[in-house]
Image (cartoon, rainbow, N blue to C red):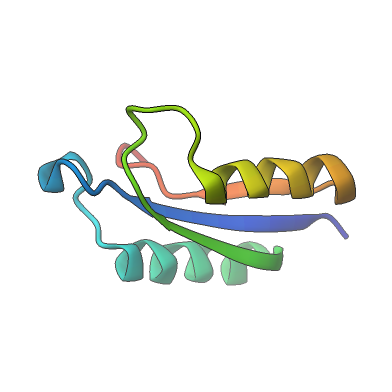
Length: 79
């Protein structure tokens, strides 16, 4: 079974950039994973702007995928 890493992020510099709070993103992503029978291995939560490179939690997520394999499940405002 494939594993998924759930990633929720809310910008700290512009509040209106993302409509959903982190908790609302998590709720939608968990519900989706349950409906689709996806294996969530870990949840990554980050409160940082994406304007500047070097988000530490996102970088850890990518490193974990490189080491252990897996996929990212993240909320998108157009979906």
